[in-house]
Structures are given as structure tokens and as C-alpha cells.
Length: 442
Ligand SMILES: Cc1ncc(C[n+]2csc(CCOP(=O)(O)OP(=O)(O)O)c2C)c(N)n1
Ligand SMILES: [Mg+2]
Image 1 (spheres, rainbow, N blue to C red):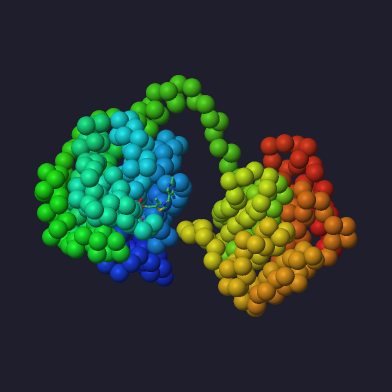
Image 2 (cartoon, rainbow, N blue to C red; image 1 turned 90 degrees about the vertical axis):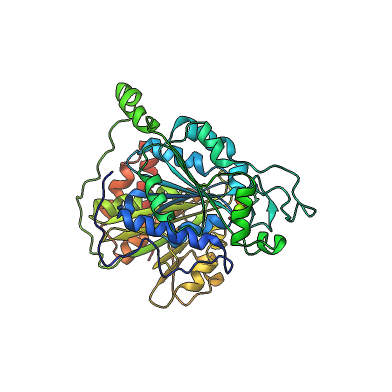
């Protein structure tokens, strides 16, 4: 595993500007501090760390850290982690999930253990569904009083550790959020090449604690009463699947052509990191335009990131893409306060009220004429002055090209080249026409 000595001005992987938003006394914060301590001990390159967060209170965890993150559907975190690991075995993938997620996605955990996928799963086991009001989960102890087991839980709790251990997990540990050894155990788990799971018992101070007069002592007593052992429960040295796959099938078939490097051919005059948001409608080429914007930036010697948001439906509703362009490497790709926000359609506008409120006089909102009056912001408002209103399919490209000319982010030629590099020639032609239509728009 490659390790880098971090910049000494970054003593933590936590984003200290962001305070934990958990309830007072919730053990989730304790476990996250232990996780941070483990990462600090290991000095892993944050670019090679991926948190995959499940749903629930625990699902909020990634926003407090400056590492890569993926957040998806309830119970499915292990599936995303598996995919990421298979795509890039060099990454350190850490799944953060609750006991609710273990119940909902138990099948995925079994299969990841059985396949010995080299990920680390931290189960934030607060013995109930925290976020939705304290319903019982698969790990609620027998007799536990919850919102759905008022008279006491009749079910036997799942022994998560024994279940993954019997299915071949390479590293298994059970403990509590109060264990001083937790950072060291997390380090061991991350260093284990194969599948590692830590079942970390916690206090849910909103629900399980008041509902059961529960305490730290009760936590230990419950574990002992169930005969669920604590400590390191399994350590096995068996081949990890993503490496085994690379060494055999992948190399034989070499199914993927090598990634094309993006060459720098242009120069950008950009001096400060610029965060842009394109807020438009699905089917309006918002995401592909944002990609071309990011690629054009890279062709101009900038770092670039892209993040997209759109509903589950296809070709209907909003489509909002965020792009950051910077002279420096971008370690956090979220945008809370954009420097440039392009409001293209009513669907897009409906998604960005928070950003509009956050923006100030030094920032720019570009807006189509028909929505100009609906924009409430302190930012400077600039209205597109189209000679002919662009079609739905050319609006995003024309607007972005106009912004590139106006804000002078990088040469328009780079944007044109990024568009031409698109997979379909006829679409590239259409988009290049939309770029030409941007002349004189601003
Ligand atoms: C498939 C699915 N079912 C139900 C929900 C509703 N839901 C959201 S959070 C949550 C409880 C989460 O509990 P847990 O995973 O233990 O995390 P915690 O909140 O305790 O940290 C549920 C049931 C959902 N998001 N997805
Ligand atoms: Mg829970």
C-alpha cells in the first residue's frame, strides 16, 4: 500500500469547518474520531481513500471528511464499494453503514465476505434505525424496547461478526465506540488485503438509550448476555478478489483500452479557483456540456472536477451539474457557494435556491431572460441576450460558451476541442454550432 506523508499543515482528515450534526452523545461522532485517528496514524494519501456511506444518520458522515466519498441507496453501500474496489484495487475503501443497512443489505455483506473483496466495513451499530425514529433493526437485542417493539423485541439479534466470519471474512472485530483500541483495530482492518468488518456497538441517545434506560455498562452487559464475543474474532490470509481478478482474467482479456491522457494545449488566464453550476433540465445536455467544460479546462492546464445531480427519471425534471476549475489540485468537490451559477430553465432554478441565497456581490448569476425576474440573490445578475432563443438541446452549450467568453475562464478553442472529442461526430457538429451561436450573447 502506498503511503504519503501528508502536508503537515493538514493534521487531520476531518474538515474541521464542519461540526458533527449528530444528536448530543450519539456515538457516531466518537467512531468518526477513531476513524480519523486511524487515518492519521496511517498517513494515507486522502486521494486514495474512499468513504462509501450508507443511508441513515451514519450516512451523513462523509461530509465531515476531506476524502473521496460515494453515497447511495440504503443497504447497498457494500455493492458500490465492491465496484470501486474491482475498478481500482489501489484504493482504500471504507464502508460506513448502520445496523439498519446491515439488515436491508445483508445479502451484499455476505457476498463481499464470501468473495473476499478488500474493503473495510465499519458497522455503526446503535441497535436501531436512528434516523427514522428508533425502529428495531436486525441487531436490536432480545427484549429491546423500540418504536416498533413497544413491549420488547421478540426476535433474536443477528450476530453480524459470526455471519461474515463463517463466510470467509479476512478480518473480523467486535467492540464498542468507547474502545480506546479502536483506531488500531481500524488500521489493522484497512491494512488487511481482504474483506474486513468491524461491528462497533454504540449508544443511540435519541431513541435506544431513553427507551431502555440504556448506558455504556448496559451495552457491555447486553453483549455478554448474548454471548457475542468482543475483540479480534478472525484473521485469515486468503487471496483478495480484485487482485486475483487483475492477475488472472483481467490480464488475459485486457478488456479495457488504456485511458486517454488529456494533453495541455492551451493556457488559461484563471487565477483563482472558480466553482460553476449549470442548472438546467434533463434532456438539455447539461451533463455533457459540463464534461466538455471540465475537459476544456484540463486541456488548458487546469484541474477540474464534475459532479452531477438529476432525478431517477430519464429526460424529465432537473439536471444540475457542478464544475470546479482550479490551478491547484481539488481535494473537495462540493460547491456551497458558486462563483458562477447559470440558471437555464425553471427545473434548474427550483434546485438552487440555497446557492442563490449563499452567493454575494462578487459572484455572478447568468440567467435566461424569461427567468431573470425570478432570481433573488445578492450576486451580480447577467441576463443572456440571445439573438435567437436556442433550442432545448443547444441552450446549455450556447450559454456555457457565452460564459467562457465573458468570464474568460480559458480559451474557447479548448472548449471546442473538448466538444469535438465527444464520442459521436454528428452530436459534436451540432454542439459546435451551438458554440458559434454564443457570439454577442453577453
Ligand atoms: C430501502 C430503504 N428503506 C427504508 C428507508 C428509510 N430509512 C432512512 S434512514 C433509515 C434508518 C437508518 O438506520 P441505520 O441504517 O441503522 O442508520 P442510523 O440512522 O441508525 O445511523 C431508514 C429505514 C430507506 N432510505 N431506504
Ligand atoms: Mg442504526
